[in-house]
Image (cartoon, helix red, strand yellow):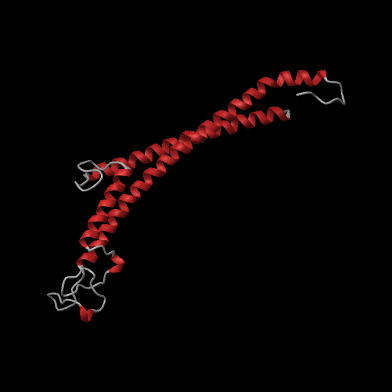
Length: 189
């Protein structure tokens, strides 16, 4: 098989592989994005009135991120602006959400042991919800990226196939021109 024909076949194969990969990537990205949205929709989360999405069903990554922000805001209000790491394990007798890590300074619970700092413990739940919602946002962005990359791969593959086809169509004219040039003379483009 002559080298030009071999490269032409290789170009077509590479182009069709790029097109198929692009279709697969776009499909998987679309499917992933749809899965994120279906899962969010199934949770039935409605944006609270003090959010950027009041009364709206949370069913997209952007809405999940907005819901995560409002959960964090509510948690910070509950703890006086303190994060989990800024609070002690035990409750203080005066109810200060800062708490303490020193058992002797802690309020005593009904069982006689240091009482847990419930505002600090509520951060575990808030962090879990925030992380899940942020993960939904990230997963939807990955799906969008996969769709974009799929389209890019398809266009690249189509471009390669078109270029190879154009080269094959011009090959007879090139061969005819090459035969007309005397040996030892450079061929004009």
